[in-house]
View 1: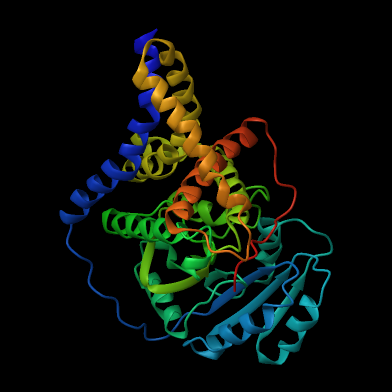
View 2: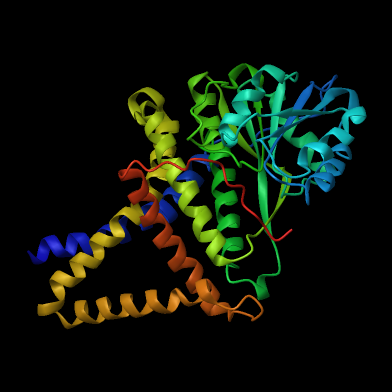
Length: 388
């Protein structure tokens, strides 16, 4: 019984060590054995690009976002902007129509169907060879667009993802820990790109060849994650482009980030199951290895956390160390929950904010597994409301 309990306690630690430390170390070894790719120059003619902008009730941000897209450093005659309104009930549609004479097209859905459903509906309206997805709440600098499109000069590339940069007033936010995690994630994607292919794109800013754009993608799944999987299925790879910067404001509160993580991970798990054939290393080699290591192994950390608590509870009656660790786990969790209810007008101490982010992320991961196991789907897309 003690051995079984020790296995339960060690399982999340072992999984965490592999997913977050050993896997990146292996990537560095693989990447170091390969020559650095030569920089790509500008094409003789820039491809026609459709920029899709799925929105729901974004009247306060849409005008600024469209102005930003119109100022991108890219030939205006090679750019098509498509606003997809998921049956918005505010002034979103009217604002989009104001830009009709500047190359902005509005596609309004008659009823709400969610982000993926909106992007499916856009399939027939796409004009570009490359489809770039963006978000109304993020900022893409003018100089960041061409590097993303330039990546498609490599005929092996089917998807190119931007580099997220988390921005916000960290000293005032309970979820300031998000900045460090996003930076780590972008570092791992850069290593995966050197090694072969990333296994998921940034939903805020990524491009995909129109020929592999799936207009019948299940609405309850995550298209940005699946885009890299679609690329693999069609014989392409997906890459992360460091120069294609996208500034992503942090969510307004730790509670908002907590709910976002549950939605994102639950949809990710369901997407991976839908494309589970890609986890076969005998057929998909490095890509399957990366998918299992980067995605599944990380998510298994959350699934094994409750098992570790059970293991400590089994060991506690006969082990002071286990009893102390169990007590420390409970107290740390309770303290880490404090930022969820912290007054919005008061500064959260940095150590407490970091602890809160870690605790909230772990609980969100457990909640996502429960949602998937119960077959609970998010009925509609709820856009993340951010600080900017």
